[in-house]
Image 1 (cartoon, helix red, strand yellow):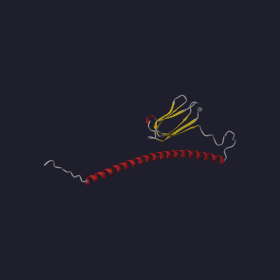
Image 2: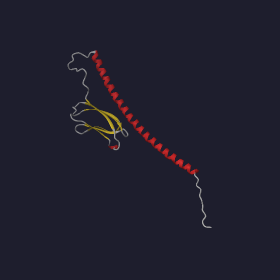
Image 3: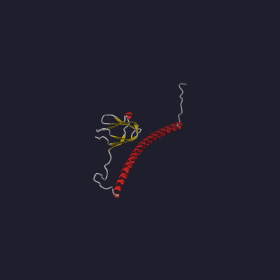
Image 4: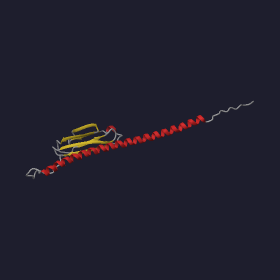
Length: 173
């Protein structure tokens, strides 16, 4: 359950399958649609919860029933707690504590970038494997066609040089 006033972010990306697109829908606890997109490859949606309750999101692949898809999603609820709680503090943060906070923020952004590039790598790997499979099938098909044409040419050349004399026989004299 999400409490009212909490900031939430839904992020998704299709990694494998078809045209790399899905339908996405996000509903509040009353069933009101907060977000609805059709045939998206990736997107991010940030909202503030207007009510307490369970928010639902759904990915649909109805328009492409034959293609299975892999979807990465990240649903972040709320903010990270501060490194140094301010309720017991009398003085301002020391220089070391401020440096720790800024390093922590920078590392969170590095984690986000790293996740993004891992997803791109997984998507690229999937496309490369698909292309490799297609090239392999095409190569096997070409090899079979080449074999059939070669055998056909051998028989055709043999027919040019075979001696097909027609003999006529005389009947009755």
